[in-house]
Length: 372
Image 1 (cartoon, rainbow, N blue to C red):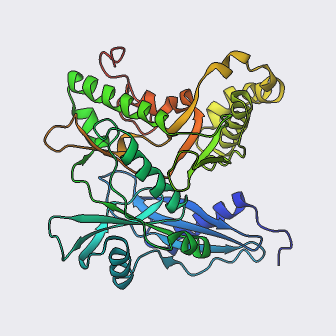
Image 2 (cartoon, one colour):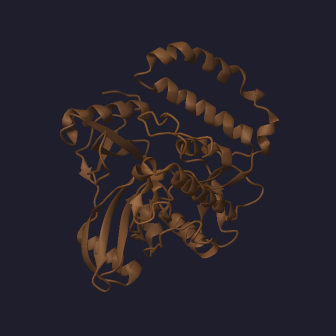
Image 3 (tube, rainbow, N blue to C red):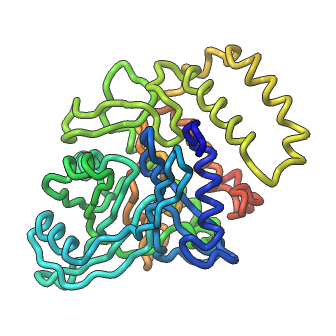
């Protein structure tokens, strides 16, 4: 039996082999997506699923898989789900209404979702999500603060309905439940490429205003870089913790310190990336030379970039548009990743508004992209 504890990278290899080997279903023609749920000295716990590489968003079965760090043994997968009795109890506790029906709903990349209706009001529906990434009570407090303090015509968010005692429950089992009002409309991701240039101009302006509206969220001074955490939603009720999105550490007291950590993280990701050996041969040694020798040369001028509050995943798949008027934003959803960070660090999200969709997320520019 191996004596050294399994590393996270080695655990990923075991997880992928297990999933592609049929451990959670037939894998031919499918991709494996996974996220680390928890890590202890003895066990890595993962959420994993098989899903089609192409095709419209749809609910998928996610499984909790544990890998023993000493024996390398893989646990029997357990489907991540909410029993209907638990759904009914949660809806009643959070909204005071009685469950009428429930069905699986389009998931986020790190959640399992249900759409539910209630007996008390047939015109109202809710979305109930299981989340292991991020504090549900922090998300609820942040969304509540936004809905109270920021013009909903600029930054619309779905109403949230906190479940009593959910903070303690999530701390105990590692999975939180979030209930929001269902907002009818269309996800912007498939709609945006079909818009005319003039429609894109309108929508990009509105996304920019929503992006800027996040800057009204009060942050502690002096400003540092990391995850923005809400506790109660009052002024002064926000704190900044270590970066979780990329697991960079922190909080960072300067933009240069943050950039050094991010560049090191990006280079490690490059080293691990498969299928690009030709590019690695051309560029990897040069990039490594910069990482090893020149990170201290990042110019002081980067400290002029404002550190602001940001929804760091405000991509098109998290923007709900009106079905009748596709330039109208109905809601910005999935506030799992909220940061105090240099606003320019979201360049990849901004870049995608100027380019056609592609597998590498860097497709050809739209016509007249300079106007966008």
